Image (tube, rainbow, N blue to C red; front, side, top):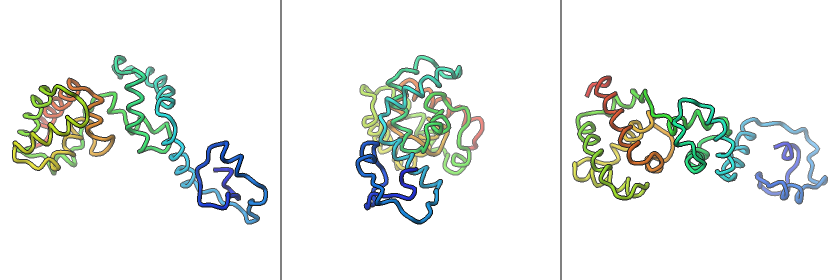
Length: 212
């Protein structure tokens, strides 16, 4: 961002590697007019570099911080698990220090849920659908994003329900939030047992707190 204050390479390019920047830089292309720092542009540029960085490198740094959190089950704090969480989250953040804020639910099951959405969308069909989805999930032989999605849609078809009407609710049951990481990739990350446990816990919470 500092290099682009008062200079450009004569093109619209704004993202450079260090080598590209060194090779492209010339005194002749320095602007004579005063430069203005744009905080929003700086955030955008940082976001682009973050997306390009290898998730494993980010995960290695973040893992050391996560190990200090005693609320996280240490058994999931593996390089592969954390790398996957970074891959799911880094398209949605601008700085590494936003990882936890945007993805704490990937490590700790929610105890609160987006009641604003639930109060509008939760109904008897949803209760029946998700209670029936648990055994469907438990019977899956392959636990990965594609078969999880297929199983949910097949269960919806057999239940006479539009699967799209259940997607946001499924997300809330898993994460407590109405938005976030890619839904079926998130379920795949959690594993079969954790996914089913989260659905069961959410159903209990909703039965206690949200009128059907």
